[in-house]
Image (cartoon, rainbow, N blue to C red; front, side, top):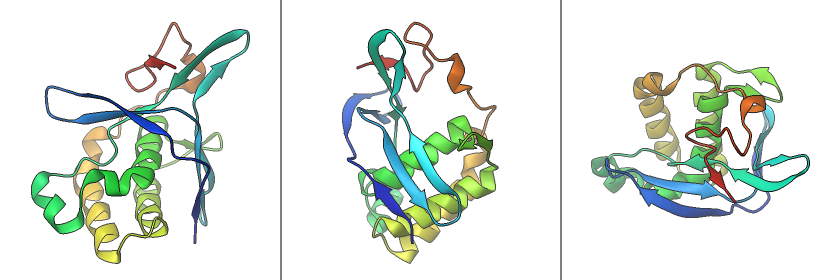
Length: 157
């Protein structure tokens, strides 16, 4: 069984025109997975620069109709944060990861966070069926600076 490490410290940022709520991670967050090892979602720091750049996530994109069955997106915030990170950067410990591994990790993380098998299976089926549109070329972390941020590392904290 895997476990989440450290404080989960996110703050609401905004709701976009499509109704998606975005959250800013204020400190690095970790998940120890039995199969993949340690996954770290960092808050980026830069030598000689006091600014930090926080990661932005929408957690799980759960249609309202499904919320009545499995619960609201916030219920899956910690596993969804890890999964969003894997989809965007596609690395664990500097090594490339395939989409299938990221989706299986989400299922395990949902269970490790105390959710039901039914919820884990539902989320896994959803990302397997619909996640392909979000699996794009990975962003290279080394290219991100306080003056050159991305859509999901775009807030100076």
